[in-house]
Length: 479
Image 1 (spheres, rainbow, N blue to C red):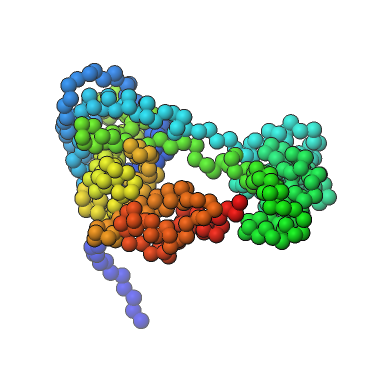
Image 2: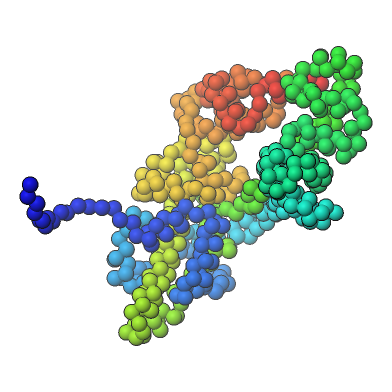
């Protein structure tokens, strides 16, 4: 068999995504807080970037802000022509008048106070560790305590056995229970329990209710019977009447079944809307929320670098070229992100006009493809820009994903959004008689009367389960 070496030319096409384009796409996906952190990090790392000083806008007559001229960009035309990847993201962008923006800025401060958006959430582990360090336990016991605290779930329950904790702390198994008992009486009381019954018993002991054998028996042996409202066997066993049982149940309901829930570190600290929609002179105005987001510009150092471009080593020149290109790109990426977000919100307002005018019950069905076709973008871009982005509306703060929902047919032939039906279910359940809760069939009839939607009982049951609402039998109060 003969072998020979030949040279062949082959032409093929490959999709190549540059690091700069990856950065631009990631900026679309960032939430507001992540975007602020990314910009601050870039400011620290890039010598060619600087933050613009805030200027006090003068009061001017209402006028439309003109579209920026192309020659006002901080990069050359040659640089712009090389970045052809951005052609997908280009589009028209406009804003409201300066006078209208100033008026709505004052409205937002009154209508959305800081305490309504921000809430400090302490960390359960840090809260318990602070008490452990101040406790009179020995150093050996504190090591055991650290292992116990490190094995708590979000609700504050212990998910490790005594043997596992002893192995982690390298101690004998019989040394774990005394430390565990101490931690279970830390604030919040009942933390580090292994079951709901144990958690409630610890709280009963702390409140000195453990002296009542009936109350202890109810918590230890009959929690499931109380949940399913099987009262007759309980009344016979403890020889008490219904009024006395009601008093015991009130005491149990006053206990905290999730002692670590209020201190869970996974809860969001705050929500700050990326954009606002408000009505002004009969029209809905879109306001971008640029507060706390640094306004970037190219540093004067770039002029010095261009003048000394022929000096210095090749490595220094390559580094400076890369930093200057990155600075230009991130400024452009932020502007295109802003334009994309504005255009998407503008299209959402157009398609969901009844929602902004009348409220959540007028929410219409909407899919990503509709918005993508309307503004000339891809569905993937719409999906990215609507993820972890929030809008402040006259009816509250909503994630942009909220406006995309499936459709239901109404009696007049029109379509209704599924989120409107879910909102109606929550209202009906909230206003129902606790002694006679509405069944899924009754909810279906009420929704048909209120919204005119043809919705089946099984659909109501599905939406009710998605909302975390129990069935009518579990919602019923017998006294």
